[in-house]
Amino acid sequence: MSSTTAKILYTGKTHTTGGRDGASRSSDGNLDIRLSSPGSNGPGANPEQLFAAGWSACFLGAVGKAAAEHRLSVPADVAVDTEVDLVLGDDG
Image 1 (tube, rainbow, N blue to C red):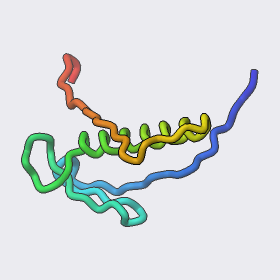
Image 2: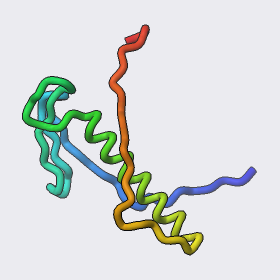
Image 3: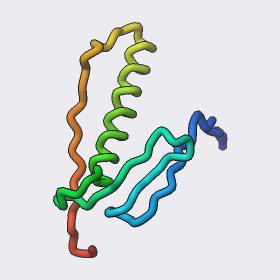
Image 4: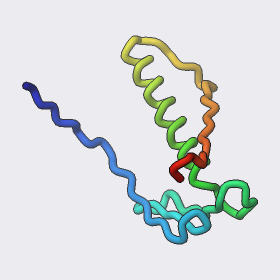
C-alpha cells in the first residue's frame, strides 16, 4: 500500500463576524468585505456569491494549468459563468 503526501501551496485565512449579515476579512487584509443575506438587497456580497467567484477562479486556474501542460493556450478573455444554489431540503 502506497502513501502520498500532498504539499500545501497556500492556506487562505479569514475572520468572519455576524454570519450572513456581518463582515469577513482575510488575514492579509486583501479581502475586507461586508456580507448580506441572499435576496436581502443588503450592502455586501452574500456567501453564495463569494463561493461562486472563488470556485470559478480556481476552475479557470486549473484550465490554464492543464492547457499549459499540453502546450495549449487559453484565450485571455475566457470566462466561466457560475451558479451556486441555496437550497432548503427535507432535512434542513
